[in-house]
Amino acid sequence: MRRRVKPRFWVIMIALTVIVFATSFAVMSRRYAQGEQRLKQVQSERDALILQVSALSDKLDFARTDDYVIRTARDELGMIMPGEVRYVNGAR
Image 1 (spheres, one colour):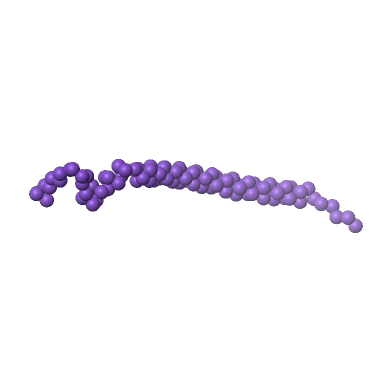
Image 2 (spheres, rainbow, N blue to C red; image 1 turned 120 degrees about the horizontal axis):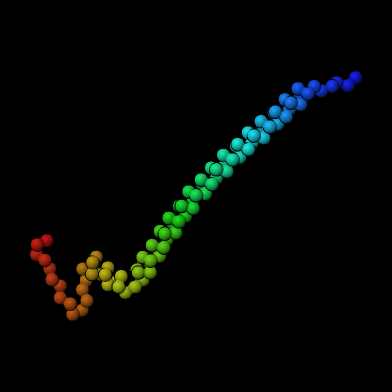
């Protein structure tokens, strides 16, 4: 004896299949959007870090020059070049 499947069964099965695929599509679309947002955020952070590395590289290049050594010696250590005369402000 063979059972006959009613058309209502097929309608329900098709409806369930469509619901499952629609739900899966919605979830994947949301994850994709979140991934894009995260990618933009990470790229922004990367760009900021590249600028920071560039600035630090410029500072390091300047720190390797004689001008840096002279400026540091004058400003932080109070040294003067031979033959120079130091003037001191008595108001301090």
